[in-house]
Image 1: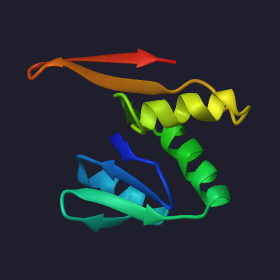
Image 2: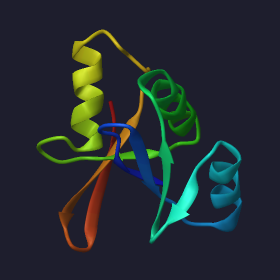
Image 3: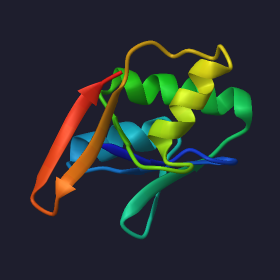
Image 4: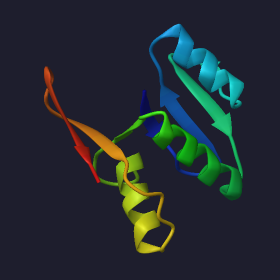
Length: 100
């Protein structure tokens, strides 16, 4: 599972596997195109992010308001979620996963 957007009032993820899709539906996500999405307020977003971290979700890394950068901003604002993982691509066939 990869978190692709956590800016604003939505959390958007890409999920593979029916069991994981069903678990995400059980916490409120719905299917939208090739992703799953949930609309949240700030308090709900923190709960959802914690649940996704517990599920082993990977935060998409990049510059700007990518999920990995939003998580770094949260740390700077003393809104710390504990350890989480990011994913980034080195080239079209090679990716790296890091724990932060």
